[in-house]
Image (tube, rainbow, N blue to C red; front, side):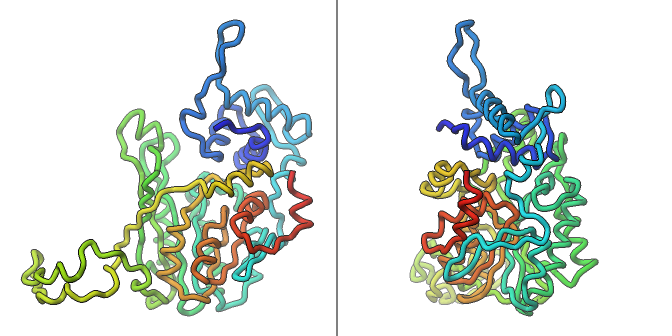
Length: 401
């Protein structure tokens, strides 16, 4: 699949913004490719040989041409050789929300998508209103869009603590939070960062939040990464599991594992004779396994492949020249967690909603939802997943290219 230069413009600007507003071409090539979800083959595809018999990296050439277009439009400058930088006009092009701004991008009968900064949005929620806060926050090194601080693990932990503390009074007494958090490596080293450990320790020592459980998303389509340690040097394993930290101030927060029963591997009638003493010493009734409870109790491991989103969504992004979110959470994971911790009619909030997988899951499950993101571009693209939406036409007409 060939990526058009129109599709490259916003990812190019976004990559520069996330790297502090200026970066080298080599770093930008990788960042743009990651944001677009390109395969290794797409990144390394060569052009046909020119009249001198030389070939060139087709993707990098297209990025350079897109950068020239952005320079002519006043979006990107080159303050020195080998450096690309974002202009003030380029920053505006990203449509990142400013402080104090809260704008409804679209609504459905179940919820609304808000363009706003996380810090601004917290103050607009009523106390004791949210049943579940479910989100997939950025990992350390990808915070620039949400928090204008350093990108190390300490800043990540502080950012998460601020979010959790800010939303704490907005949660119902029976409410809880589920955080799909990724493990990451220390830059340049084959060792893991300790941001998740530090977050849990600060929750215990500084708040009333406790860990109810830890679920694990097994991403069946996860690529081998970091490429250097897993695929090149072969000294680490493929990181195909991501934790979902389930926390609450109430040890008995709303939950029902009957809502997420799994299909029986065998019909209950076939397990009639499975009684007796088990390997662990427990004595089980011979009829204990014969009762049909509608399914077996789910484990903490949930398997679902990653997704680039439905075809109509990707085609809509291409048509409007909008960037695809670089880390789309599978809707199946959101549905699983929402069913476990809420009932129909409950309010679910995602403060870093990105591609709006949480909102789509809520629509399917008849839950009310409020989802927000600081990137208008991501919300504008994700609106195509909601056929019954009532959208802010004047806002979208003004921002679409």
